[in-house]
Image (tube, rainbow, N blue to C red; front, top):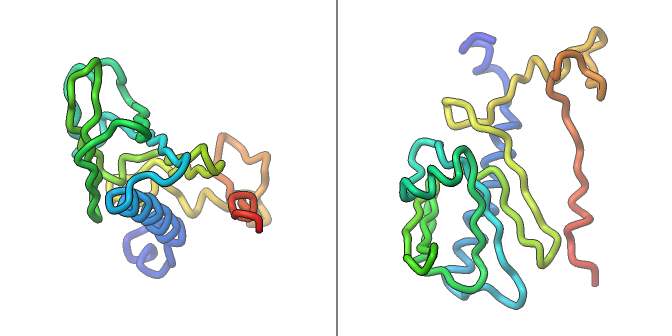
Length: 166
């Protein structure tokens, strides 16, 4: 799709990714202000080789590609803005400050309430690496679970399973 054609397409994939990353940002902001309530804790998986990730070299060497951190009992200097989050965690009793762009996060989970978000890999423009033409790629123009050559398909997920029942 040319740039001109892309200007005429609503990029729902980018809108959804942006909104979901906003959930991560808001959750971190609330923890910054009030701490983790009850049994809440976060598992955050991110790409260690993503531009803007700032972690010690020994951690990047130990976790090439992806790393998961847990925010539960001992974390300090938690911060977040529109672009990145930062936190100080202890590794072998050595405090290390980690800076993680929100765009580098691939999974955000709070197991205490069975909540998880998984993000699409991001393209060079900061949007999801998503081909809208490959989304509906069969002859009838409808999505099909058995797509050829690993083409991407959509999936509708109900959020009801994550809502608290009264």
